[in-house]
Image (cartoon, rainbow, N blue to C red; front, side, top):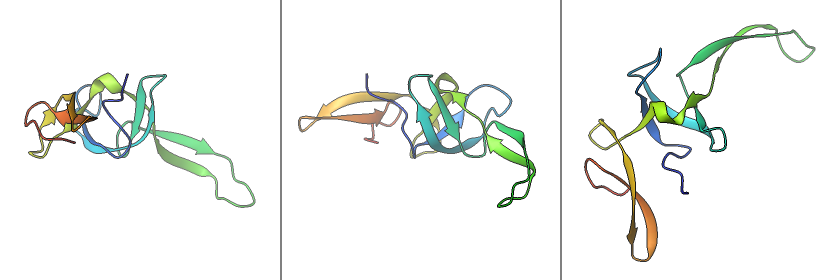
Length: 101
């Protein structure tokens, strides 16, 4: 099945502690059904000091379930993503506006 959300898509969080926040997808893991969105679901990771890097507490974006994300359309509203065939090619489109993504 084709991916409804891809790397680089602007999404909004629908559920969880970061509900309402928007960001861009950095990484998608389709097998696990999760994605990493910049600025969302931030956790503090502790790193040891090495010869090349300073140790300490570093914020890191953790994966969030794809079901808790919605694509943001041209109007800035959350929308579902559908598929249709245009000129013999399968394309994604926003269900609220009908615009091709």
